[in-house]
Length: 202
Image (cartoon, rainbow, N blue to C red):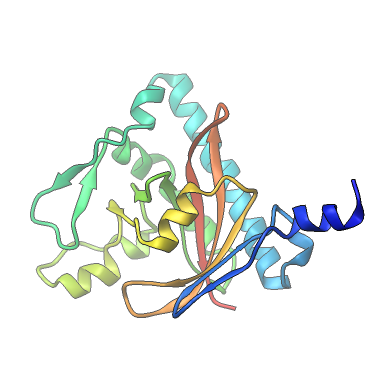
């Protein structure tokens, strides 16, 4: 392969959308990332490996079937605003992966959140700090109880559906804050489940 063809395959594209969305698929070329971004990618990969191990143990133990873990029948949870949903596996995720997500979140001061989302952007289990008790205040809930929501905004879906080694984006959160989003895909027996998403400040 010619050098220019190799370069073209390494840097596929760079799209800048007005306002808040920066999509930079780089085919896993971590050497092109800034130091902070490389550290975040390392944490994301470690988190992915730990979550994947838990998923495999859940399947091998019979706690969940593969069909249950890939469940996309999202059942609305009554009286929640913003709307939340339950699945056949979200409570298992609460018990099995929240500690992993919290540990990874505390691994670096730049991190804002560390979560696992399915390929549609459904977030079954959030970090403890974003899983505070629900109130009647929708604005408070938006900022402090973000678990079990479907984040199918443009950034969220891009992260959830990406199958490249990593995806780096600029993320405008619905809380009014903007930061960066690093995601790495999760495959279970070569089947794309979703992604680990890590929000961070530079």
